[in-house]
Amino acid sequence: MLFKEMIRQVFAGGRRFRLINIKIADQLEKLDKNQYTVIQDFEIKDYKNKKMIIDYIIISEYGIFVINVKRFKGLIYGYETDYLWHQNKNGNIEKFFNPFFQNQRRIDVLKIFLQDFKEIEYHNIVVFSDAAEFYIENVFQNHLIHVGELFSEIASIQKINISEEAKEEITKKLIYCIEDQRQKKDEYINVLIENNKKRLLDVMIKEIH
Image 1 (spheres, rainbow, N blue to C red):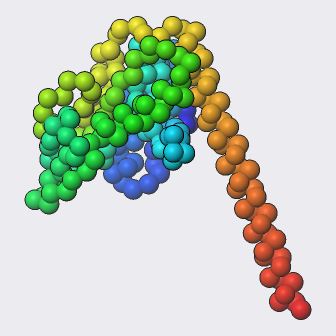
Image 2: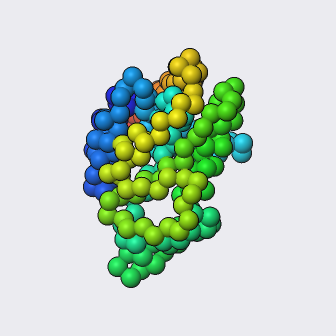
Image 3: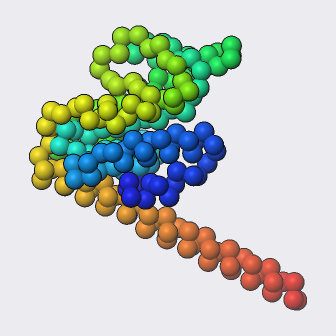
């Protein structure tokens, strides 16, 4: 989903979902639109044909930012290289999959999708709700931030990595993929509607007879 359409979606889902999406939209609105292109909820399939959704992709001359949003509250702790992290919410401790690893899988699939574009730097960013307090040890390779730090984190990376031409080609490729997915979804929905109409007509005919 392109950024210009993102605002339409910020009120979808539950209250916590809405709040963090509004905050993310506020942060990304600060980015220079001539330098950054924001895509939300990008669907892509892995080598097993399993669908995954990338929360946000941001294309710029400074590389591709791949953002994984976590709406957790409470204390988050672990190590950057741990397979599982822990959430302590009011004394209840739950384990969850390391979001850096989760996001890296998405990045790896995205790299294959964009394999024509070599030596691009991908930035693995995990964003937590401001209601989360995290103690993650030894974070060296990735970016772990609260939602209120998103703009400053992205803006702090200023090493040019992608040419203007390549940036435009990457953006077009991703947008074309989105439009193709939408067309297929629309066709699928139309088929469902027609099938339901036919079933309803068959039921009405049976009732008449």
